[in-house]
Length: 632
Image (cartoon, rainbow, N blue to C red; front, side):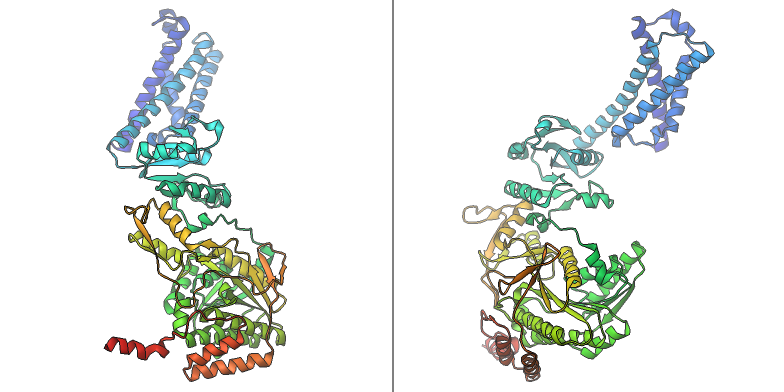
């Protein structure tokens, strides 16, 4: 039926309801089906009340509301309309001395009208939902959390979505057996029974204001139930305009229970606001987030320095859209370039008068660098020195190196090249005459970065498994990319020169347990000897070349607090300038002569505690073996 026709039907139905309500008022007041003496005097009311009532309802917008989406606000509108109608009619009767009726009649009429008008809409809405549920293939869900957010979510889902809420669970004793938005509230202990009884497909978390630790605890409980878990947006996302029914998959950071500390905006502004900023490796995971935060925190110019054309194009497009959407006044300069070209980088920093540099460009994938030793050395160590010397030549105010926990007592070439890079930055920080403040920030894995286990596990689950984990006992530190980038900016602003800042990563996470949680929260089961009919198998493949069972963030125990609770400052050994210069000469020689053995030896001499977990597996060194295997 066309919308216009529906409104005509609603108007006629309301006129009938008002007429019946008025008759009910007289009939109830005088205990007669048809009190003739009063109705003969007040017959005109039966013409005026319905017409005048409909006019009031039109003015209040009652007929613009869609009945199947009706909520408590609609009942309020009906109540206001009825109150206006009764008040106006009664005032007119008194003023013109007409329609003399007992004072109880208008009261009964008002209550009856509200019940008839609201009830008719409730009946229509209930019938619509019954008809929809009878013919639809909506998935049944249980909502975890019966507070205001959960009730709002249920109403929105009932108004037309792919999900059909069948129950709430909440441990609030005041809500026990209460009916919320048409669904009964049960204690969480009833979850297994409810899932089986209703054949539930998903559990929806409605806990927008819960702490990270509380969410982690709840998810830990739910992970054993083998149903898919989804979540409504957080309180911050709701404030930013997201709708409660914009459900999302559970992210790994939900499992960490890590509270993100509000950034110190004074520290953020010190290095970003009204500054010309350059990010090397701008298209990478950390580099791109540093770019986003620079744009959103008032940078005047942002130079994107990136070797990969595709990565540079992608981040430039994203930042341009961000700039336009938020009406930001920032110049975005995409530059194709390698940190292995000191001349190119010096020209860029000088011509754009860069004041702050975040050096995120590096090769970070442990096995790849293990097989490409010389390129790892050239990019991670010599490239860092090039960037630092370019910053010094361009009189940059601050230079921040993005380092890694793999630089601590490294067992792989990637970690050793990053520690060598730290030593180079410490050296130049101690002898620079330009006034540039050099520092470095060391942290562990970030969630969702390229090469991270999280997107790998997610893809493997989607493909039906197996999930591959290198070792049952391997663990890693994790942090979200936005938090890591924010802390990098704040740490760089606290630097006086030469500091190694270490981010508080919380507790390390066992990778096997992470994989199992991701399987459970996808609503799947683990395939094992005890459960051969499970969905996803976890396969242990063995440690890769250079891989450690666990990572560390500190080389020694000499660590100092800073003004930020999540940022520490480590005091670590440094090398003399002459030693650094000789090591750099040796590095250039190793690269020029394509000698990966020599490169590994110089890294051993430069980096205290570097104990390779494997021999030299550089592809250029083992090429003959590869060819031989292929021939035979």
